[in-house]
Amino acid sequence: MKYILALSFFCACTDPSLSVDDSGTDGTELGDPDTDTDTDTDTDTDTDTDTAATTMPIPVPIDAQLIDGSHPLLTGRLDSGDRFARAHIAVGDVDGDGVGDLVVGGRSDDDGATDAGAFYVLFLTSDNDIRDVQKVSAVEGGLSAHLEQPLPEGGFFGYAFAAPGDLDSDGVPDLITSSPTTGTLFVLFLNADGTVRDAVQHDGLVDAWALSSTYDFDGDGIAEIAAGNPNAGRGAGELTWLSTSPTGELTTVGSIGVDELSLTTDDGFGGRSIAPVGDVNGDGWPDIVVGAFAADDGRGRTWVVLLDDTGSALSGTSIGNGLGGFTSVLDANDNFGHAVIVLPFSDVPVVVSGANRDDDTFEDAGALYALTLTSTGQVDSQVKWGEQQIPGVSTPMLGRWGRSLSLLGVDGNQATIAVGGGARTTGNIWIVTLERQP
Ligand SMILES: [Ca+2]
Ligand SMILES: [Ca+2]
Ligand SMILES: [Ca+2]
Ligand SMILES: [Ca+2]
Image 1 (cartoon, rainbow, N blue to C red):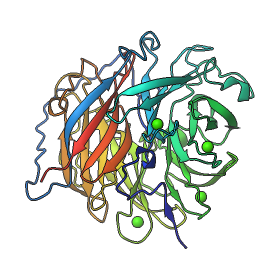
Image 2 (image 1 turned 90 degrees about the vertical axis):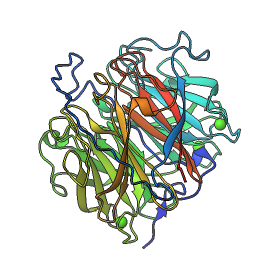
Image 3 (image 1 turned 120 degrees about the horizontal axis):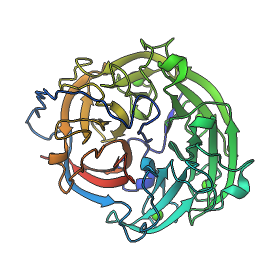
């Protein structure tokens, strides 16, 4: 048997289109009341100590650039409550200019109907700005001509994304997204200008609140898609494996849930983030990390799930408050694990997990934790990136920084990621450059 890491997972990627990732976050839907009754007393005594030594495996944030509704290319386009950047993904180089592009969802966009949803293709420049934007919604971007019915009210189109690569080999990367409230998945074949050339719609497979393109277990050249439904199994949550094809078919080929892991009701496993992590335990088969942000009274957990050659779970380790070697203190409703990505450095991969309702600076400011893992999936080292430690980032009250994450690329000792914030406002996204220090 063999597997092919999706999109050259461990390459020293200079092309952001090679990045694998998924999304992430948000959440008014599951235990995330807008009428926040959080009664945290903030008695954290975090001991986020770096194990100072030679070259630190965990990089340091060195730059952050904000893209929000004040950007000249977005002015007047984002409305309050659109939830821009609830999820986003490095889809690949759509326009073929050599720079990978970023798809950013706005699941509560009101084009066509209230909360019908939308996404934007942001054509990035090499200095992490955007040079053009294409919106795809019920009324823009050529989508509606290919749908069986209009995007419905409350469908949250664009809630989660997977980047499967160029499925149909026409030179333009393609995209998979979801309307989780209607149980619909969309395989979208894109044009080089970001509009939709064709769409294949699938109803009834899975309510996908998280999506990720992972590994090619069956060796057909296309990585299997992991879809997370945190509401499955009375809220224990479940991951569903989907195999896709060059024509946009999707077939269920397996699952991971309460039968495989020690999940309990309301853990919310699979919501709202899943990411490939490489071969953690060195058995030759690639493994995954999966968020469970609702677990433990909303403190949240991040699972490291060891897989066999078919994607079945061999075992899982949950990382959280007092669990899995994690040494920071999580408060109730911090939502650790709401967003998860992996920085695929060639030697030691770094897991980044968002706790977008961290209150250590102020209410729901948000924070990120960066972790390296032992071969058993426990935390080996960890660093917390709070608001004060990110150059240029000043999150507003209720900033929810880190509600969503995506990986733009890794090049040597540098990584570039996108970080969503502003959950209760219009929404915003930061492009953050990280660098390992000698
Ligand atoms: Ca491009
Ligand atoms: Ca294509
Ligand atoms: Ca496959
Ligand atoms: Ca493994």
